[in-house]
Length: 502
Image (cartoon, rainbow, N blue to C red; front, side, top):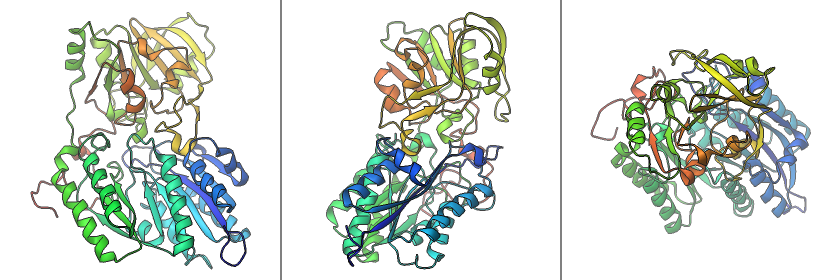
């Protein structure tokens, strides 16, 4: 596609992806990010990532791609300001060298640094302030668990968020965002009308197969179908562990029509979300009681999953909590498996051979939410480099990093009837290849502890006989009232009880 003057359209492509947990005592530094620069972004073709989806449309449209940079890190604590400035230096440096006609971005939407509680809004604002950038078409794809800010909506022309949780459609939504950029180049720039509501749901309440998200997604798609001026209606679940003034549930209509009409559509979305607000707080169970139920049901077919959202790696937890581990040990559960991130334990096993027996302190290290390590007599089963390829290219974890995953050096140990996979890089349990890469078939477990909230479902639901969400201590607890919010806009459900929508 040409720019209308016979010249090839030049489109800058970049990515910035981090979901920031505001209550964990760590800083996410530059070394925690996987960084690709310039033409290295082209290696993401075929990876299943958001960048892959953006590039597909660029290729289809015949655009000349100007690859800038892509920064991505596992969810964790607040980001060092130096990371933001490094990304901005790389992005703005590319623009200084390479004039472009449009911009495509792959974002998360819940990134917070020590000085900025809206990093994506800051980046978009800075982009618009550069010479010649104020009027250029700008489209971005972003995560359903963003905390969508007014600045993001003000400075972008098109924003498209995932419609599925687990996020099986990240690449598809990137394609959608890029296709809307093509539409913008043909028809002119739309605008974004934004609405934040006073509702905060923990990640466990944001699965799109369940209420309230299923009903909200259905309404959003019906609005798109009935109003041709609405290019996209975004349902943004929010990220409850980000402490910002714009944290929580939000909606954003991308419209080429009358913004007052878009506001009326948003009224419908907001009313429905408020009416269904209690559905976003699903129940959680005592793991000891669940294990007792499991023990009384020996005839089940397939493993039982005990889902532990409080230590959800995909939400920024360290993945080394011992709550589930202690429950499995107390019940003396046989045929159980659990994954724990513990680089110190892995290092202690690095020079041992399979079959070695030793005493090992596992989990709970540098975790103020946990009582501390559990010391066990274990037998070493195997060690590995921890690299594996996702079995499912629609996995929740493919969005930012693509299909090749690195758990860091790993070790598998056994204690009585319990198998423990120890990793040295936090790796969310969203793909069964994590177990199979270590020579372990997860279907053969009787019980599997899963440190997740919703995103594990695509991998684990097909093999599970039953699944229970259990309550344990941890930084991603669904008890939101336990967190010391300082910036959160109040009043907000469920922290503040009110029957009328604020």
